[in-house]
Structure formats: structure tokens, C-alpha cells
Image (cartoon, rainbow, N blue to C red; front, side, top):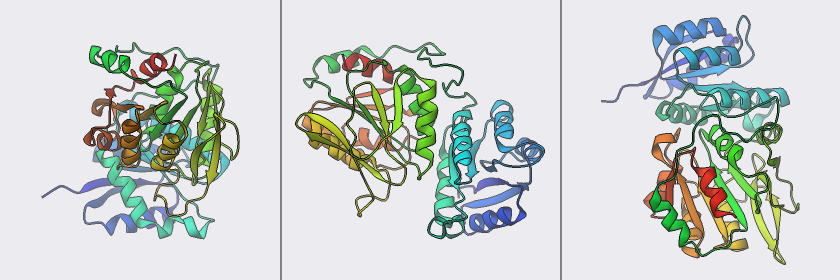
Length: 361
């Protein structure tokens, strides 16, 4: 019999602590092992209770969630799911938490009845389950805030020789870079984007599973941090080489080819996918727009979104790269591509930008 997932709830609101506890207790696979009302208590309880997952609020007295997260990741690395408000400041702080090592986040959405956390027990439990399976590292991402930089902070392992042979046989002329990611994605994306050439000859489009409001904060922070331009994609805009476009949270991003010029199309979901944005939707459009002239990268994430259309891309002649199991936070989405025999290369997160730069000359 499998042991239950041990959860520590941290929130300064007794009301929110009780709501989360009731949600978690509806699962036979989880148990609440403790509750804390500030960051100081959280750090001590993580050390003594050794939970599998911590749900961590950001705004708290004595020690806030970001401060507590730094201590937790340094002294006792644990899977942390942030509980975030849907404000502009809340989004910025959530992105910072993901940089610091948090696995994922739960938006409270208290003022939105349709998205209200109190109606989403299954959503909350899914986040906790994914976090319990994730690999945890105390190492922060490569985001920098003082100046733009693409210099790596660590030595980058060279790709295997077999990869060079596969790349040499690639017949396409890259016109687009497509990236899909989910759980653990923001941290992985920072690793890849920080290593891309600022004068990359093609546009980059990204589908990262995130709700509305958070992708703009992610794009803004990356744009400030790296030499390559990063922005949230806008409907109808031309996709320029050397620019990274992140699909808006809660919507789908498609690529359209009009007279050999690529444009972004943003739309709501019409039953295409349970994920918004969806990697499948983006990859399908990329195949229609450029076919073999595409480099597609699948990063860490739970589930299989994107696998079907990445396989179609490969069959069209595109070059497909997947993040390897060792460096994935959750080896779900890349594994689903590998299982379909649709991956040309499996690479560590530190190798991917190097290979992409080599492919897109």
C-alpha cells in the first residue's frame, strides 16, 4: 500500500488554511501533517515534519512566503506549491517563487466565481500530486535582475556525438522554434532562453501551461534579464526573428503563415484542449505554417500535451528535442514524446540552447 502524500499548509488566514485542509482531506492519497500561519513557523515545521509537499502563501507576517521559500530550498529542499493572488504584484511574486525553486502555484482567484479556488478541489489536489512526484533542487534559475546577460553560470555539458550525426541529417531550413512546457517550465525556460543567441535567425514561440495574468509577468521578467527579446504574444502581430513570444495564459497561440511571413493568432478555447495555452494547438499550427522547417523542443511537465503534434511535426521532417529525465522536474511531457518515437535527441536542460543555436544558423 502506498504511503499518503504528506502536506504542510502555510497561510496567515485561518479561513484559507481550513479550506485547503478540507480539500486535501477529500483525497484518500493525501494527509495534512501540519499547518503554519507564517514563514518562520513554516521553516521549523518543514524541518521537523518533513512533508512531501508544502502549500505556501506569499503575503504573511514575520517572514513572508518568498523569504521562507529561500530558507526551505537552502536548508531542507522540499516540493513547494505557492498559493498566489491574481494581482499584478501577486503574479510577479509567483514568478520569483518559481525562480527560487517552487514547483508550481495555485491562483486564489477569490474575486472570480468561475475560477474560484474553493470550487477547484480536484485542481488543487492535482497540483499537489504533481509536486509530490517532482524532483526538487535548491538551485535557483538563471534569472538576473541587474543587467541583461546570456552568460551561463555553470559549465555546460557537451551533447553526445550521436546527436551531431542526427543534426547533420536534418534536411529542414529552420524558420521557427517551438517550445512546450508545464510543471517546472519557468525555471527550465530560463535556462534555455538565457542561452539562445540574441540574433537568432527565427522567432521563438512558447506554450507554457499558465493562467491569465502570469505569462505577462514571466515574459517581462525574462525580457529584462536576457539579451534576446521576450514578450507575451499579441493577436495578429508579426513574429520577428530574434524575439521570443510566450502564449498568453488562458488562451491558445497559433502560428499563421501569410505569404512566407509568420504571424501570431490568439484565441479562446473552443474545445481543442483542456490546457490553455496548449502545446498541441501551437505545434499543430507550426506544422501547417512551416512543416519541416521547424525545431521543436519539449521541456518538463506533467501529462502528454504536445506529444501527438510533436510526432506529426517529426513525420513532416521537423527536428524534435526533448529534455532528459535526469534534469526534468516532472518527466511527463518529454517522456510522452519519446514513447511515440518522436524525439530526435534527448538532452539535459543545459545542453538544449547550445544545440538549438547550432541547428538554427
